[in-house]
Length: 269
Ligand SMILES: [Zn+2]
Ligand SMILES: [Zn+2]
Image 1 (cartoon, rainbow, N blue to C red):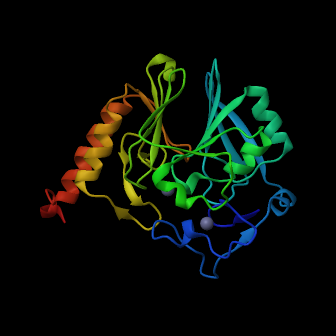
Image 2 (cartoon, rainbow, N blue to C red):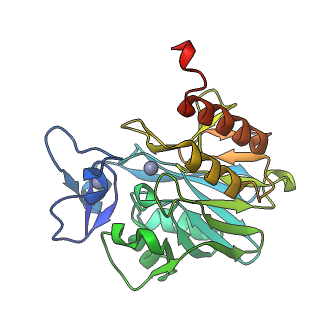
Image 3 (cartoon, rainbow, N blue to C red):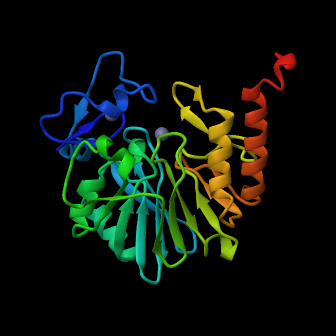
């Protein structure tokens, strides 16, 4: 197994390029494709940190960061945990830390940029299923029997639902956690719906690093798809949180975005 240095997604040993980074939504360093290994990351001092964000929810990060530097989430229910988005590093103490919180019964990433070491994590946790939307299966660079396709909407655990809403990738998904935010509901928006630095708005992009927008029609489709859920708080995958009022903020942000890409505000430019 080798790990892309830029996105921290696992590949087979014979991989030559990272298709995820070569795609227009990501980027390859000026010097070309770089690979790393778990041993190398370990000797560089990377470690997994677990942080309680609210009752039954933990942020999972690698410090110092690897790859894209996401914050993964561990959602705990009475029937086990979901590991949502996957760190690009794992070791024995990370596995012990996660096991102390609960039994992981499924691993799911919002989209290929967040695959991290999903198969490696699965093996370390006893071959738990790695759920990948069927339309995005071709992005899995380390095929393994633990990978299970899904599509549409998946009631995974009590109060935890995965929804493939598309946009950023055809399989881009969100997770709805009904019991989160004190019962007001949480949406894990990831790159599907990303929180903005102002923390009172969100955005939707085909590419974040290369700044490629989506159309008004797609933004409306994604927004309508998440409006079937009740949620007050939104976590993206970089530690940015819309603490409350998130459902209305998603709608307001979508309306603003659609107005801009439609040209309603061209007189201001
Ligand atoms: Zn990559
Ligand atoms: Zn992404």
